[in-house]
Length: 139
Image (cartoon, rainbow, N blue to C red; front, side, top):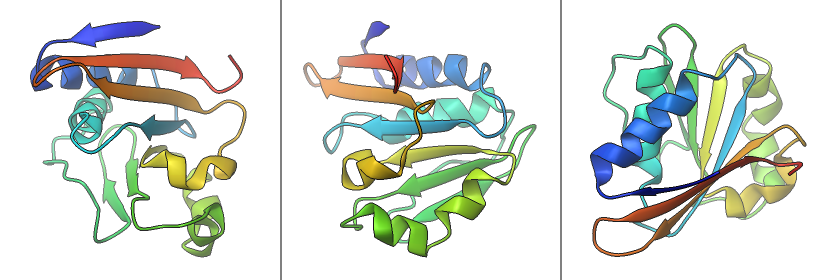
């Protein structure tokens, strides 16, 4: 599915729509350059999961945990160089904790994702507009 959003709020709204459909155990792998809207999309995803906390990028922490109707484990892989580092921080444990894992900078850990991973690619079209492609890994 391809969607064009015209501002950050619309990008977050698309994340919220997806969040409302996710079940515990889902993994959402985000791809896109700096400023493409990954964190805005995940803010919306969190809202869709019933999370009321303010969502920020976990760049320096690697992972932030948020709790609502379904927990959200928000990863930022910008500083990692391989999926081995992801497994070293307990990736297997997170994906088995009955929450949703959302991963920014998935390019850096591509080999860590299962075939049922939901892929979200964000592309900057202009200062405000973004192209979102949302699909399952096996598609």
